Length: 340
Image (tube, rainbow, N blue to C red; front, side):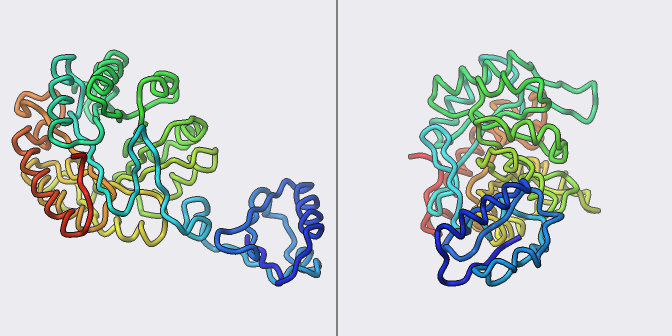
């Protein structure tokens, strides 16, 4: 609900309004850009619109029809910039690159990939340690050992690390070792997990559910932000459609659409979005052109023998080619890609 004030309002009038609303467990903030519109939050379901209009300094009361609040440009018109280490995610002139294996397989593997990722211009290192796999017989990660190895590699090569959290039981481990906590597609609507990470002081990477609408995805972000954690990065990773030529249908239209609706940064995952390594490069370039704030790319030193998702992982040679072409596209848009 939004209250629009008349041009002249005394400070004591606002104090009175705040005091009376707090009695009903309702608070308000000024909307960005002016001092005449107040956004009400809290127990507003039983609030009487007529009682508000009885205040002589209130011009009108508007009920919001959209369920989106904290993720909307209505409350935050300016783009959100999220700080991770020395990296700013969401800058207009910057496309960040997150690269690494689908799964941490060994110390030797993750150190090698971290070294190459850094050398080729990646900004962050990804790696799965707790893997929610469709088959219970597939490799499901090294778990705590994998998180520790990922952290070790990230620190050695000065790369913030990203990994997927699957249960609130591991929050303490992740807040200690992980710089950007990922909520995967399967858990996008795990509301108890969303509320749990909403209470931590770590940025969250929220992947779109494989059958989620844009509104459902944004409402999942709303769950996190409503608990106090405002540092949410969205990730488009493809949705399930009737098409089976690719693993998913990568919805790049979601990138400019999100930019219209929400100030949150959005990155794209063309690896999961297509499921085919040969499609990762062209869809990465298209994602950059669509306005994405970053890419998350799966790379592996030997994809044919990867323990997880080798078919969608780029070799180090192909990742080198992608970075070269990506920089050309970014430059054409007056942006920088990866670190120098």
